[in-house]
Image (cartoon, rainbow, N blue to C red; front, top):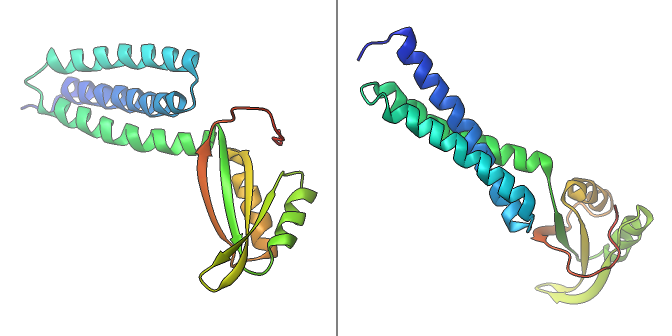
Length: 173
């Protein structure tokens, strides 16, 4: 193995292609889950094209072990970059489940004042009565809701799950 400029350049190109391809793949999966067919098709087409070019570059130069390293490192890095971008894009909706043993009504009022729809449900927890709140929001608004909840009850328990709206209702834009 020679560490020539061409060998290093080829490995770097393969690395960069794999990062882009895997980032696109991660985002494509995000849109698959959300049912966005047109975006999924476009991302899939782009991902496949980049993959063919990257693997072709590896296969035409099998004597360069740096290509294997670039391929594997690009795959791993692309997954992480895709996850990072997915978190920043925050596409879709999330349902927040908020449980507060003492301040549920105050949390609900605070969220409603901020324009969020909230459903209150009285419930019994391990130590007695609690208020369960359900608030469905766009994913990018979840940190804002979390901040509002913490302002009222720092001990509130919050979980989140991705959802897809099926019928109309109140969704804060």
